[in-house]
Length: 462
Image (cartoon, rainbow, N blue to C red; front, side):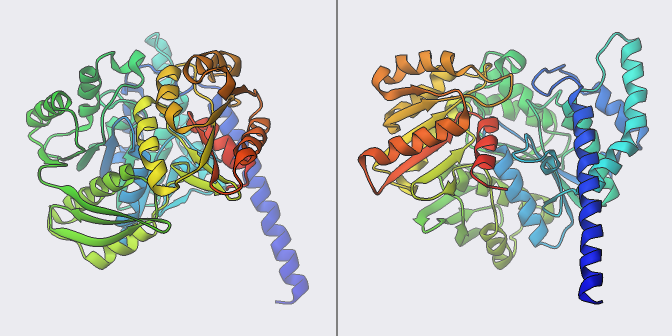
């Protein structure tokens, strides 16, 4: 092919890609017209009906199903990477997305491309519209934004086809749209309080809803929980005849050493001890996520026998978790972390000193209106020298001036700045971080996954 021919071919390819992207964006706008994912109708009946019309694509592959209050996405990414290193074709469904909505549906570790995104939507839309009509006749809502994506994910995984799908719940468990799939392995990360208006005011009520993903005869991999939460989950598991593997009992993080670019772990799984595992992620919480992921894959692939240590090491060394204690800029260091509840903020704070050791740290914080801003800010207060309060672009965001009033109560007026625009908030935070120290200054963006997503785009992260 001549240079001229190559140039023409590249131009045609670019045109096709641009057309596909435009069509995918139009589809996304169409789906956005549906009920947003934060407005919950606690039932998976509609998704189940669509899946039945499609021939139950969620039964065409094995499933690892994950729930919990924090750590679901990171653990999902680790499970998927381990499975792929074992030569299996994988699907991964997580939410929300950081840059483009395609990220929610990944095959072999990569978001589905725009053409596949559009084709999948067009394939499932007639069946979605049939169930929408049935729902209307019953006086019920049509499928929501999130429910459409669940259907699309299950269909895309069946079409690929994948060997295993790693599926993160949207919210809760028992009535979540993803729970039409029967997980061979269920993973429950630490359970705390979040989404109380839907899951219940009591952490025990929340635990019972999350335990609803444990299916008959499955294996449950259970993170360390408080005694009362564990009791609730174990009761559900016993009713389902599930095999239970508990962190701190059958499995554990034996050792964890901070290393350049991450940490080195020794993990005791079902099949034995895996030593000298490098994980390129920061924070003790990621070590515990890694343990859950390892054991989930042991349970799925071998029933609990040991995996090849070299394969495990190669997989973990290649793990990423965007938006989770992620450095996105240097000089000064800017970190983003999607902690959006007090438990997530607590895990974040516990990891900051050991991984970064900032002399001066300025926070850029925005939260959603339905979260616990005072609880999040109270956890962050001891580690932030100053805070720049802001808001993301979503209507769900707590207005910056309202969050600022709460921040003044927690931090004191002299340490609080209120800047509505995120780009301006980032600029001010960098200036304030560098004002008193030349080295060891840092900026932390946190409080909301959507805020983190917008910050990553502003700072040039894909």
